[in-house]
Image 1 (cartoon, rainbow, N blue to C red):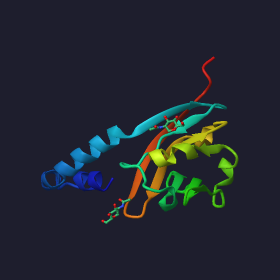
Image 2: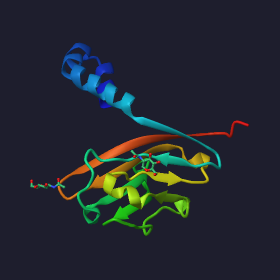
Image 3: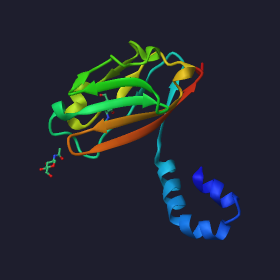
Image 4: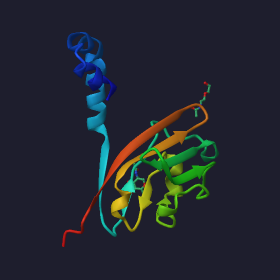
Length: 144
Ligand SMILES: *[C@@H]1O[C@H](CO)[C@@H](O)[C@H](O)[C@H]1NC(C)=O
Ligand SMILES: *[C@@H]1O[C@H](CO)[C@@H](O)[C@H](O)[C@H]1NC(C)=O
């Protein structure tokens, strides 16, 4: 956004030189973003894996959010926590505890609604390192 604003404000040449590389990198990151499709009433798995699997589950804190705002799901010290979960997601999300040690913090969302569409971000807090992953969920009408 910032970049476009600056370019359109007239300093085209100057800002193209300064921002050529960042623009290029940003574009390739966007195209790498994952997209998942689901149908109304169906389910969808939203993937999330850190670069390296955790050494112990107790060190892990994973928080899933939608649109950087609402809490969808949380794993604290290897335990599921729904304390701060948004009502919209109550009883509709599960994860795969047997997969945690393999670095798989994917969640499965059930009974999909139109309002579930959007960008989900999975924040992984490990002892030494924090990472995040984003995935776009598209919701479609059932095609029957
Ligand atoms: C994570 O686990 C889920 C459930 O078993 C599976 O569907 C998904 O493919 C796994 N993801 C990876 C990256 O292994
Ligand atoms: C954390 O950092 C220490 C020291 O740099 C290293 O020995 C250890 O393997 C790291 N742990 C993880 C989970 O990366």
